[in-house]
Image (tube, rainbow, N blue to C red; front, side, top):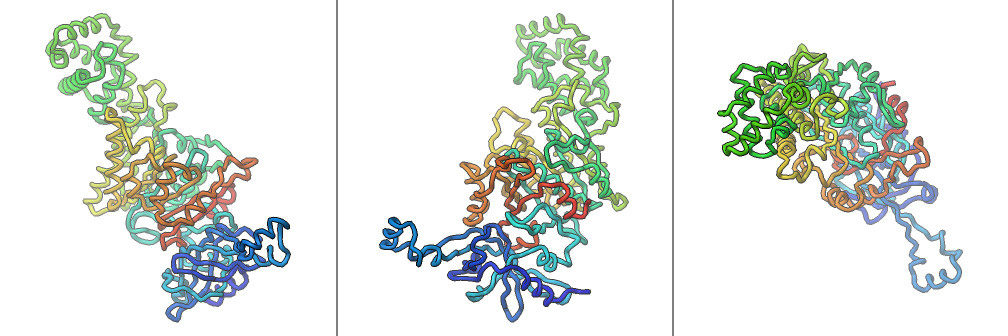
Length: 586
C-alpha cells in the first residue's frame, strides 16, 4: 500500500528531539538551541530533520550538525570570572545557565509530490524559531526514499551516527537507473585511509548494471589480487563471489598475456632497454635514430610485430645493424661508428638475443597462453552492441610481479598505459560518431603517479600519459566514458583533472599543509564542513582493527541527500557482513 504523508509524520514524531531553530539563522546555515536532555549526547555529525511550511506545502529539510558551541553569558562577565577563579564554580550560574548552540548545514529538502512519494525542493525561507529539530533514523530515510529503494546503495553510516547514508551510483546511459551522461569521480586519502576498499565497494555498485563496462588499470596489482582470492587486510571483500553473484563476467589481463600491438611501442621500449646500451649507444638522439631506422628496416623486411621474439627475426635485426649504410644514419662520425662495429663483432649474438632482445620482443608475442592484443581486449570490453547484454569487468594488472622474464619498469608501464588510454579514447570517439554511448567506467589506481601536477621535462612517456588523461577528463564525458581516479594526495594530482571531477570522496590525511589548502579551494567557503573534516581520526590510531573508523567527506551529486551541493560525512563500513547486508548482497 502506498505510504501517506501522515506515515512520515508519525515516524518523525517517534524520533528523538534534539533542539529547536534559534537565532540568527539563514537558508544556508541554521542555529540550533539544543534541548537539555540532548546536550550531553554526541551531536556533531548527526543527521537531523525538521518540518516546515513553504508555499502552503509541507516540506522536510535534512542536514548534518557540524558544530556545537557552549555559551554562558554570566561566565563571560569580568566580575563573575574573578569569583569563578577563586571558587571554581558558582552554584547559581555554572552549568545551570549554560546554553548549547548547534550549527546545521541543510543538504536536502523534500516536499510531498503525491501519494507515491517525495520530490526535491529548495529551502526558500527560514522557519520560525522554536521549530523542532528531530534526529533522523533509518525509518525516516527509507520512507523518504521509498520510490528509489532499488537505486540506493550504501557505503557506510552517517558520520558518528547509526543511520546508513543513502548514496546512488547510476549507469551512464539513458533509461531506468541511468544518469544520461558520464561523470568523473575522485577518491583521495593517505595510505591506510580506506580509499582502496571504498573504490572496490563503488566498483560493485556499478557492477549491478549488466550493460555497464568496467575497466580497472591496476599498476600495483591490488584489484587483480582480490579477484585472484589474495585479498589482504581485515576488510576482505569476496570480490569473485560478488561479481559472479551480480552475473558479471570478469577477466584479469596481466603483463604476461597483454599483447602490445604498435611498432611505435616497440621502438620506444627498445630505446629504454639495455640493447643499444650494450652496443655503446647511450640514451640520446643517436639511440632514437638507431631505434627508428631498425624498426623501419624490419618492417620493409616483412617482419611482423608478433614474430619479433623469434631468433630469425633477431638475426635480421642483427644484420641490419651490421650494414654500414644503416650505421651512417645514426653515427656520422667514423670514430663512434668504429666503436659500435667493434662492440657488435665482439658481442655474443645468442646471448644478446636471450638477455636483451627477447625480453622486449615477448611483449609483442601473440601465441602466449590466453594472450589478447590491446585492441582485441578493449573491443571485447567496450562493444556496445544490443546483443552484448552482459558487459564485463576487465582488470589490467601492470604490476612488476607479473612481468617476470619480460623487460619491465615504470617507464614501460607508462608506455603501456598510454597505449590503453589511446585505445579507450579512440573507441569512445568511434561509438560516439555511431550515436552510441559507451556506458563505461575506467578506474585509475595510483592516479597521482600517472597524472602528477609536475612531470620532469625529460620523461616523455609520463608527460604523454598525463596529457591523454587530461584530454580524456575534458572530452569523454559526452561519449559515456567516466573515470574514477584514486590518489594518495590531492595537491600533487593534475589540477585540470581535478577541475573535471564531479564527485569527490575525501578520506583521512588531507588536513595539513598543501593538502588542506587544495581541499579548501575545492570545498570553497564551507568553513564548518572543513572544521568537521579536521576531526577525522587516523583509522590506525584505534586500539584494535575491529574498532577502526574510516571516515569520508563526499561532495557532489552522489546522494539523494546532497542535491544542494553541500558536503556529506560518513563512516565507511568496517565489517564485510554489514556492507553485504545493507546492499542485499549477502
